Length: 125
Image (cartoon, rainbow, N blue to C red; front, side, top):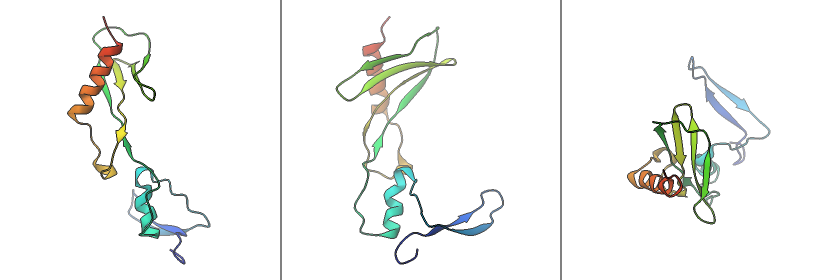
């Protein structure tokens, strides 16, 4: 920090543990869901700049051939999809607001059931 601004970074080499500093004229905050954690290091009173969301997908083993991708509108803002990939079928997706710590996000039974219910709506024998 210089005069309350980020002007570089202290880094550690992940291979040999060597630590070193890097100065910069411009620092880009590309920390994904941790963007506000970094902003509060510079300004503890910084208001949130993003809304976190959580999305889940399922990867299922295919038991029969599947030759095409399918996307079906669920509502005005969302679709569900089924996408063949190697010997798997990708199903998704959920999208909901998330207010926890970014590193703690995890799929739950509600997510799984939502994806399966939406897939059943779209994919029928």
